[in-house]
Amino acid sequence: MQQISKYLTTSDVERSTTAIRKGINNTLPVEFLNNAKYVAELYDLIYTKFNGNVRINSFYRCVKLNKAIGGSGTSQHCTASAFDVEGINGVSNKEIFEFCRTLDFDQLINEFQDKNGEPAWVHISRREKNRKQVLKAIKKGKETIYLPL
Image 1 (cartoon, rainbow, N blue to C red):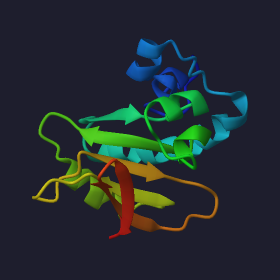
Image 2 (cartoon, rainbow, N blue to C red):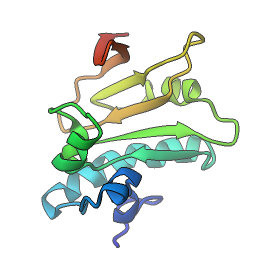
Image 3 (cartoon, rainbow, N blue to C red):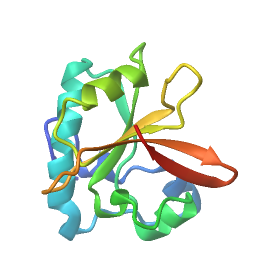
């Protein structure tokens, strides 16, 4: 286990209940370590802003794990360049999403918001040349559609 940022270790990046349940090895490859460190800087900012009342529900996903959960074939999770975060202890995902708009990100996705605009979780990614895409994910049948926000 290696510390990759102030608040995250490689163990945090690799953690997946689906991987454990399905016996999938989700060890972070060394070639993606710098990606994880770069995007983890955003997590540290979010963690600090909300006094630790946030948790990651998905970070690195090997291709096999990504396929097992029905993730996009081009998911930035597969290169450890993205994570999904949610609020705990009264912090709303909407608050996290709005704070994330102020950060230097590649993609920010409001994932499956309810009728009040509260995301089920917030996806954020980062790379060297950030596009600053702000999207919302919705289900259309079994398919996930991403719309500009």
